[in-house]
Length: 359
Image (cartoon, rainbow, N blue to C red; front, side, top):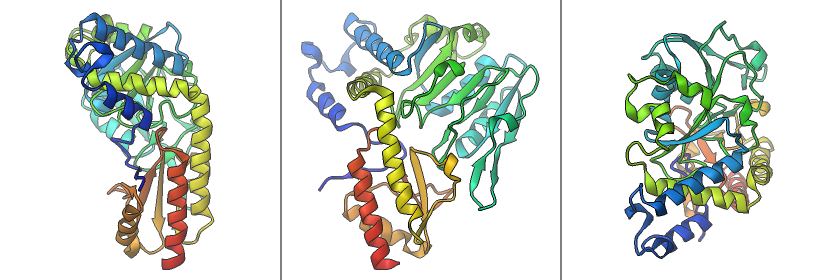
């Protein structure tokens, strides 16, 4: 039986990547060593690191105006790193659309003046919708604007292109590499790896070089963007094996046609699942269609008393990790890049059969 893992993170990795990593686990590139055993400063590993950076730059179509950093601490680490590096005693605008942007606000407020605005509302159909960017209140001389284009817990995604009179910072943890985005519209993006990049333990930061000047010596070295950039992400020992796996994922994406090809597949997967929900009176999604996430699809059963049985029977069919986040409840199918469309098709078939027998 094929098992399809719908976990929100750490999430499924591509099968091809896992097979290649398994083949190379004990003897990478005929060195007689695993990648995780190599010194991060040896020429063999530096080649892995440089290749990972080059592949990501190609996928994101990055210009030389940007630096790629591999850092510790995941997304929550960046919740602290961003204000520590960029705030500089100023005021930043944070826009809240769900659980993760709310958490970012709580962390950033420890480091200075944060203007926080909730930009979601319930529309006439009682669906959660996000205000258009033109209705967001950005303060004059804002140090930066921070938002989360995809809320993993809530299943809310923003597809609008940002254009503000302040540097734009975005938490792309759950949407990076899933759709084409012009990174030139952002000044800093960050992403925990464990959704569309690789295993947990590393986070990626893409920062416009001119912002590096804001980092000062008072910032802890492990979170200092300027110091990290100057040392090629190797001021200390980086999560070497996680970076190697990220490189394999980047190369896998490139082999599949890059982000543009992956976006087409992700649209097809999301449309298939949302159609099954919308065509049913048994399942429901509470997000306005224009803000429905392609990566994280929450849905509820008409009778919550059937939730436990739904999960039990789904697992028997090889459909795992479908339980919704404790804050939202119900179900959640995370369909990141590595989830094949066959997994979504199998889930939809199960949902229809479950409705037929229990609806």
